[in-house]
Amino acid sequence: MQPDKREDVLKRLAFIDGHLQGVRRMVEDDKYCVDVLKQTFAVRRAIEKMEQIMLDGHLHTCVVEGIKEGRDDQVIGELVDLYALANK
Amino acid sequence: MQPDKREDVLKRLAFIDGHLQGVRRMVEDDKYCVDVLKQTFAVRRAIEKMEQIMLDGHLHTCVVEGIKEGRDDQVIGELVDLYALANK
Amino acid sequence: MQPDKREDVLKRLAFIDGHLQGVRRMVEDDKYCVDVLKQTFAVRRAIEKMEQIMLDGHLHTCVVEGIKEGRDDQVIGELVDLYALANK
Amino acid sequence: MQPDKREDVLKRLAFIDGHLQGVRRMVEDDKYCVDVLKQTFAVRRAIEKMEQIMLDGHLHTCVVEGIKEGRDDQVIGELVDLYALANK
Image 1 (cartoon, each protein chain N blue to C red):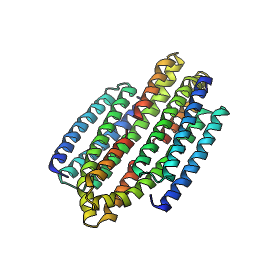
Image 2: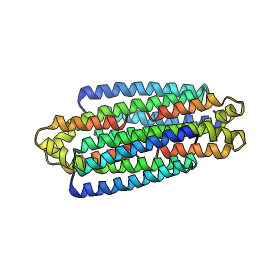
Image 3: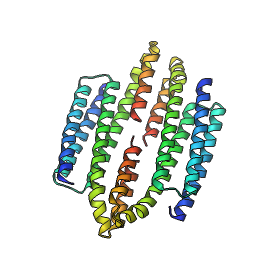
Image 4: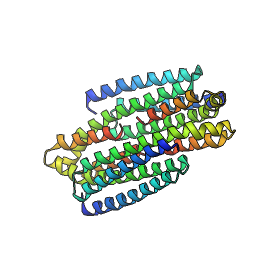
């Protein structure tokens, strides 16, 4: 991963971790399930956003390089697998 | 799209269309909503499967060609946009 | 389904069907895959919106009636199954 | 939340947290993006599973009680909002 992308991803991971600790406290304090669910939806949304940033970096670096080096089948195969996995 | 992919996609579209006509009849006949919803989920699943086939073809052809021709920014940008759109 | 919901759902189904015919023509005319995919995403989005309307009606009628008649296990069980199915 | 559900949810949260720490280490160690993404997909999947358990408990308790106490509009409205939010 490019250094600036990695820094961004690590910041987002720290934020997601803090968000998840908040969810844990809500569950321990027996908060209303509907309110807890709204927070876990937000956590998933934050993870998806972070995934987009990683995928963006991956496409612009590894995929472009892989194809220029003739490793089309490998890098394209990985993308197809990822997409199928993301929608499972 | 490669001819065999296109034929596959058109067959799937005909199947999805038939499935959707079945959903319409269920709604007209006032079938139980839960049963209708199970069918619309299946229709969406079939569309997702068809999308995977189109994306697979796109990656193996246009994306590889585009990168080999130096149009990295265009083809990668399109993929990033598509992924963001698929998750919206 | 309540008559006004059913009418709304049938209108949406007709619109979705027309959208899908447009997708078929795009595939037959060998349009760019990225543009076809954007349209199939929109079709799925339209189906999801229609599902929300059906679910809304179902919750306000069958689920409320079922619980008031003591059929909690049935109507709640169906919702849990639907949710699991929607996320598969 | 029922005590046994809460315990289950807290265990799952601890597991998810550990999984997320693993993702952080992978990013710090500059592991291959595709492998990191597979792990973040798994984290989201684990969160979704935990949400199903919370929703299941919510439906069997608060929703049934709310409807039996005549607060249909409140509990059903919350479910409709949640569903719309989950699909956004």
